[in-house]
Amino acid sequence: MSKQAFPGIKTGSGPLPKIIATLVALALLVIVVKHPGDAATLVKDIASFVGNTIDGFVAFFRGVTA
Image 1 (cartoon, helix red, strand yellow):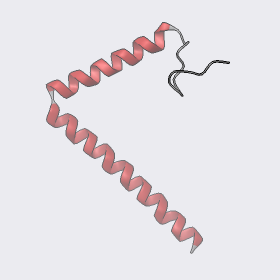
Image 2 (cartoon, rainbow, N blue to C red; image 1 turned 90 degrees about the vertical axis):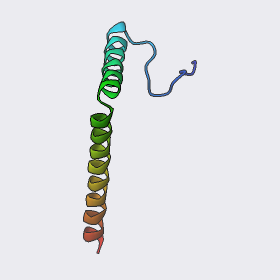
Image 3 (cartoon, rainbow, N blue to C red; image 1 turned 120 degrees about the horizontal axis):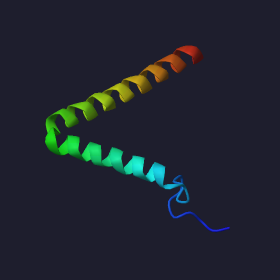
């Protein structure tokens, strides 16, 4: 059995997933180029949401184990 070049990415799939991934990447690139401030704010907001979610889980599990 041969190893995959990129673990987690199926390289033998059909063309449709590759086309969709390319279109999504292109759309993200266009958004970053045309509206860099808005894109940076969006990334900052997403990172803040993820951080707050992790903090909430930690607080919950600390409360459960206390």
